[in-house]
Amino acid sequence: MSFDGAKAVPVAFKDRKATLQVPNFKLWSPASPNLHTVTVQAILPSPTPTQDSNSPCTTRFGIRQIAAHDKAFWLNGEKIWLKGVNRHESHPEFGYATSKPTMYRDIQLMKSIGCNYVRGSHYPQCADFLDLCDELGLMVWEESLGWNNWKDLKNEIFIRDQILQTQLMVRESINHPSIIISAYLNEFASDREEGRALSDKLIDTIRAEDTGHLIGFASSHGWEDICNDKTDFIAFNQYPAWHGQIGRASTPESLAAVIKEQLDINIGYLRKRFGEDKPLMISETGCYSLYGNHDPMGAQWSEEFQSEYLEHFLKYCTTSPEMGGFTVWQFCDARTFFRGGSDIRTKPMGYNMAGLFDRHRNAKVAAGTVKKYYTEK
Figure 1 (tube, rainbow, N blue to C red):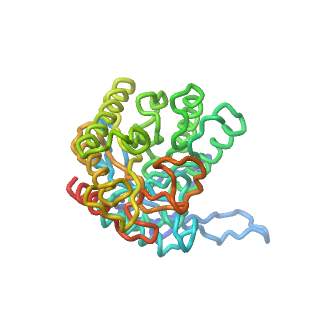
Figure 2 (figure 1 turned 135 degrees about the horizontal axis):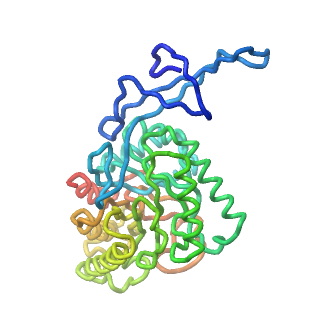
Figure 3 (figure 1 turned 90 degrees about the horizontal axis):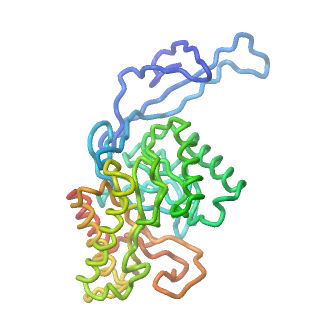
């Protein structure tokens, strides 16, 4: 075995594991995304014609430590505030298989508005994308496939498959230092006992892999959630005055008031139920706008309304001692197959229009608003 191309040394493995010191190691962080390589080559006592003892295997990795306590996140012992966006694999030309140059450009755009992390919603991420996050210094929330599950939580096949795919996700991506969070089941029924039972199983599954990742999920149940006893942090999705309570957003003052009211209620409940130590964060919030649609009065679907909406959230969250991070829904307008409903959530042209950038990556007004708060924080 050898590190970073140095001279190989023999190593004895016990139960397929060995603990070694990496010589001259450097810590990985967004500011200094240092990476190392390790090469392993089996030494076979009596190789047969079908066994090649001279086939080394090389992989890349990074060294970093992530922790969550005292209402904050800590990277390599230093306090950090997570500033991010949700990102779907979506592009008008490439569909759901974006090219590596597109991934590179997306990461550069995220970093240009002050992001230090991205949430890969809502499925395991492409290896190319994770490689780029390792190289460019962008932390990652990765989660196994799941969205809005509530009917299947007692189904033994669903439970088995959730455990298996979550285990495979963390095993596949364990060497990526950019991944700081392993998560699961976006917006599942975390207000139910069957939800808690499966959540605890998935937490135990991830912990058994010894990933060095924080563990959590994005809750949509706020003050009704019962599943965060064993998580490392608490994240919640919230869309006040957009998904529901639309009439309460008739003025900037009423919009700010309803956002503050809902955040106060959520934070108060979560602290009372789950204690004072875990950091809280917004895992999703935002609203739609049509690129190029401007209105000095800030009508809904205008770029100005989206900017105003996010500014109320950011002003609250970046100054609250309770909050450890913020994640905008979403990075860019993304394809969807939503079929029902006629309210404000309807997806025109088959796209979710909540992006800070449109589907072609043109910046909306809200991108500048987010940049202001992210670069000042």
